Amino acid sequence: MHKTTAVSLPPTIGEIIKTYEEAREKVARAYELLLDASSAFEAVMDYPPLSRAMIEDQREKDLEEINIKSWQKVIELSGAIKFMSSKKIDELEKRIHRPQYSHERIEPLPELSSKEVSDMIGALIQNGRDFAEEMLREAFDYCRPMRSQHKTNKIFRIDKKIIWHGVEMTWGKYRIHYGGYSDRFRVLDRAFHLLDGTSMSAQYKGSYNSPLIDAIQSSENGTGETDYFKFQCYQKGTIHITFKRLDLVETLNRVGNGGRFEVGGGERK
Image (cartoon, rainbow, N blue to C red; front, side):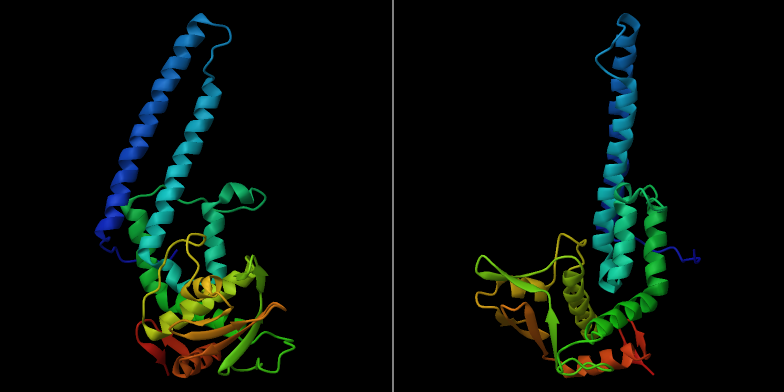
């Protein structure tokens, strides 16, 4: 891991860490009382109603759960998601939901502490431009799908309009297919917010989609627009997306083709 400079934490994150530490201590004390009760039963019964093994197993699960939930909120408040590609977010998800990926060797999340969070935010600051460029290039690649059957989609650059698959009509409204399809929309939306220097909610994946996805899924007839896009959905499963800010499209083309991007400062020669 790169050496990072210690950073001061936002008050809200500090409150979460303090609450986590206090809650962890209370949970540990509660389970100590349960273990004491189990020992008391074991002294007078052959088959005590409280199993020490089950108590210890549940204690570890509960302590891990409050650590995971606290990390999720800290990551959301840090704004890290804004700069992450879907690949980076998937890697983070695997660390958070590690038991679901028991067949893979995945490093667990450390216990939440001021030092661990400070290191994470420091690394984000140090590597922010690299994260941003990876996310922007991912959006660039999504916008020029290889072997596309639509002439509107260009191979080497993004034009003023793209055609994607990934929508379906459900109960009279259009919905985005989840999985890889929804990742494309989220990354595209984050990319344009980043290029424009504007803020987009950084809630953890699964609790928030994006203004573009929300607009599509709330549209009464499959048409609409956001600050950066106009869209038209079709029953055959395609969506036509027209870019409203061609200046941002040009910057995305430059970064996607190898240009550098300065976080907060646009494209750098």
